Image (spheres, one colour):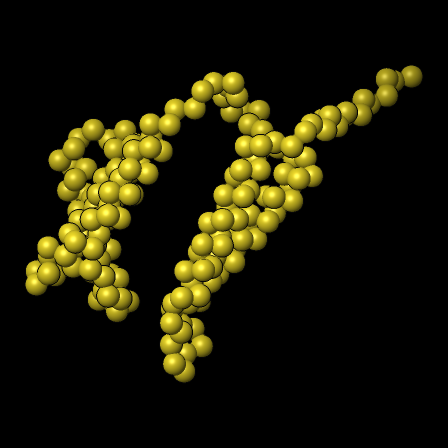
Length: 172
C-alpha cells in the first residue's frame, strides 16, 4: 500500500496584524481624501465625460481596495513575504528612501505656487530619482526639469488645464 498523501495543515490563525491594519486604514484614508477632492471638481456643462470621471474612478477604486484590505486583515490574513523573497521580517526598515521622497514631495508642494509647476514638480522628480540611487546630479536635475516641462506643456496645452507658471511666466 502506498502512503496516503499528506494534507496540508492550514496556518494557525494568528491575532490581528497591526501593520496590515494600518496599511488598510491608510489606503481607506487616501481613498476618502481623493473622493473629497474629486467631488470639489466642477462638472462640465452638457458633458457626459467631464474632468471628474477619471479621478472618481481612481478614488472609488482606492476606497474599494482599502475596504478589501481591511476585511482581509480583520479575517486574519497577513501580508507575508513570498517564498522567493530574500527578506528578514525582523530587520529594521530603512526609511531613508521614503523620507527623501516625502521630503521632496513636501518641498515641491510648498514651492509649487510661488516658483511654478515646472520647478515644484522637478523637485519632486529629482527626489524620487535620488532616492532610487541616481547620483549623477546634473543629469538627474536636467531629466527632472525636462520631464516636468513636458508634463506642464501636456497638461496646459494638451488638456487645457491651468497650472501655476511661477518664475517661468511669460516664457512658457
